[in-house]
Length: 588
Ligand code: PEP
Ligand code: MG
Image (cartoon, rainbow, N blue to C red; front, top):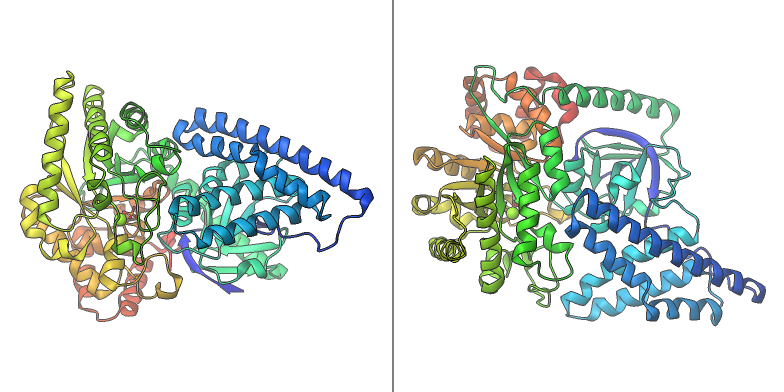
């Protein structure tokens, strides 16, 4: 049994598919003379199949999700077709007598070493793409599972990886993965957010799991408490399969409440919104019964795009998001790049010792005014489009730290509005909001509220900055806790300030979808929550079993507790009393 960080609720018992083992050198043996030609032919055939597969994938993703998400596969296809890449591999097969999968492993190792030394962030990022391509090629070379063939492995599948690469995440639908286990990552890392938005049980940060699990092993993944069991005995497997069935049953049952209004047991209306990254998430938001999109993270548009997308191209993506979002109501956040995510053409060449505290988000956008104004114009033009369709777009700025930034942003929005007006586009009044995720902004929120139309609390970052504990570092995850008493005080203070000034406030960090945290936030007076679409049905069901005075009492009691452990235990007990089923949907 191994323990990791539970990041997406639910339980699955399935077959391990280790994507990092696919290209582990199959043997250190040298090929015989007679084997070289056939190995070379095998490699070339695999290369051809991969190029065709990537091309098809690109067309499919473009059709089903959008051209931006598909762009990454075009880039991967160009890597596979790259002559220098293939010359290298073929040379090792013919001259060094290496099996193709070992040659691919060596190529990756060489590039990784080379790119690790460079300070050029663009090149460093490319190693991830190369890695993706090598994994795919190796799977074909060694006839192991690959997405288009359908695996010869019993379903359900549990993906086991060091970390989830961006294109693997996009292709998860193709793999029909129903569980995820990674060595790296934490609650708020890329893999975790993707897993939650797809409703897939997941555990991240499991130390050296790849050394202990082989493709084909039976795995239990418990996304509630982070347990991963490798090749469980029959009794254990049967016990977990029972929980898995209960979980799936509850999930299906809850999905039936999509048409029901989000109200508490005493009739107080709530807003349950969705956090989305792309058009397919917008569709999921609709399917899960969200009343709108509370956070559209635009960075995925850039992460999957080889160059800066132009204004028209961005507008088209935003319009497609508006069209597919519940009530055509979308809060669009400007680019929040830097920290854990970089794009090559914007600040990608810049490396920093403390990226989360450095040149990220609007700090970076401010220094690329042409790019930033283009994005603001595209968002405002999308607002004009949404209004015509009976919806609404709000614009949200991340990482706000002080009042000067807000003044500067408002001036940029005014200018963008004028520019559009000159082009004959009438922009409706568009609410301008700030993300509250920096402690400095929390402390001086009263000075900022008069200048913003709404506040969105980004608890993922707020918690990491308050606790001085990196949200992606499993070593400090015991500190990076949204239920820490210090965090609760700050949340309470911010929510109260917003309510007193009648400023609409939403919380869009991951804790919004955690049943225990929900009890507290409701008790603090919060009425608007934005979360992964898959979590909405369970929060709606929980709300329907709760009365406001009850939530208020729970909050008052929890706020008097002095340690995170006490808060967690107290809330766990309360949740069990109120909605015993919900523990299946809870993360420890
Ligand atoms: C947050 O920080 O809570 C948030 C919602 O933004 P992100 O996770 O994209 O940083
Ligand atoms: Mg954030």
